[in-house]
Image 1 (cartoon, helix red, strand yellow):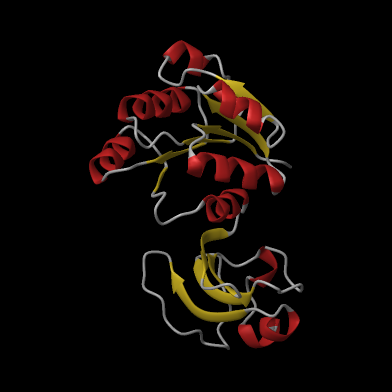
Image 2 (cartoon, one colour):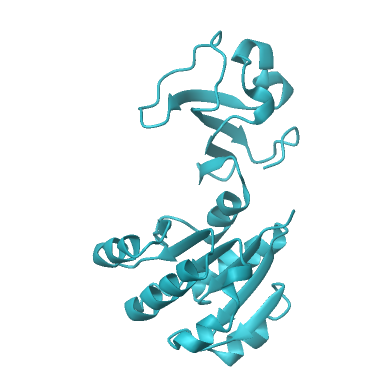
Length: 214
């Protein structure tokens, strides 16, 4: 089932995120106050809407209660970010993510209920999109032009099986370099210890890997 995601604010990060989410199959509502941006963006998402995101009534009218996730991408406007996060939480949006441009802004947005804070300097739109659309990814890094490193929970079919039994390096071209339990540090993988649903895996693979779809 497709995820419905609203991206509020179409600056550089917001545009990249919305485009990547749409390309990866999500239903994307993209919102900005700039008519020119909305016009340019109309074919790059499910719906592009002009709205003043500093106006509470305009934000309420967007119908965010129908969304699986809302991304507040107005990192330079603290007042608007606070208001939109608050409206989204009041409307029962399951996951609300907000962009913060300062440490102080991050603390405030967390305090009012943002589920995750994005640092646009360290997290590009493509990376964010992959994480948001996956139920198993925890984090995602591009090591270089050839390699990915992925932090993820085990797939359901991996639970109860060990590394020897799964043979992921041969079957899926995946190298599991470390494992940790929630709240604990990473350590090397015991190839004979079965994976559990509480494990978090650190995996390295090539971008050209055709044996496993990200």
